[in-house]
Image 1 (tube, rainbow, N blue to C red):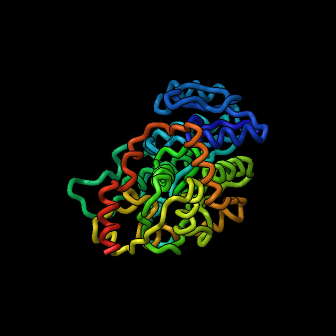
Image 2: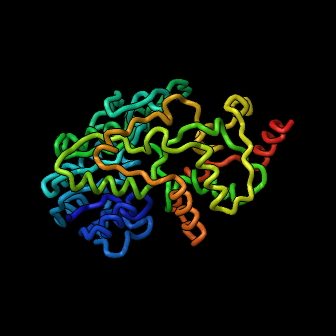
Length: 343
């Protein structure tokens, strides 16, 4: 197999490139070269996805059996469309990595692959769906952009040649968002650790290496499709996740569970101050049976936790990203809530 990875230098893109090399595939990676290097053995092609000239030059390096698009998170749909149209004559398959945010019901409703996708035209610009000032309704801007990008890939390659992957939360070595690294570093400090919600709460993070493997399987598949890429419902719990964080970092901490209503009363920001904690009904109720049937295999979350800790301990440094600073509750805030619970 000859594949082109759009991205290839960090987190999922790098995992895809490395996994493809491990399979003996020939891998090209197209990026600007600003976020590190792709794995050794990858053919680097420099360029900007918003440049018509660079896209034309990229196409001349083909053909490829498949394109795997891992780097469109901040691109407008029309830029994804231009890139896909430029590559369509020289690529057999297009695998587009989207997100569950593309669903209208996220995160308030349980989701399946047949759930309604947000509006968002294939040629939308970067401002499409942007919210007006003082908007107090659902924030669908990012989801509309991703939904439009999905339609862009389909417009260029057609239904049978496109696989759309909609992951939820991706964790693992190289994570740049900071969710799992924050929990690991907090666990390593020991003492009483504020644990959110119910210990038995089901969560569905997926390992970056498992997403990469599934993306490659789809690149090699003769069929297209739309897939929710998450761990199965009931596969893991919040207690299992946090216990794994404590064990891998030395087991010096003690979990103190705070009910949802207590955290809400203290104004704890869901999803960020205590990463992965969110009370919305659909956030961890995503049916990924279609992906499981198509070959997605999800390793135990404890393996993801262990591998990420090893990466951090070995000096692993994520690509700089503004979302990193959003995650984690301050020691003072945590102590105040713990004191309230103990009282």
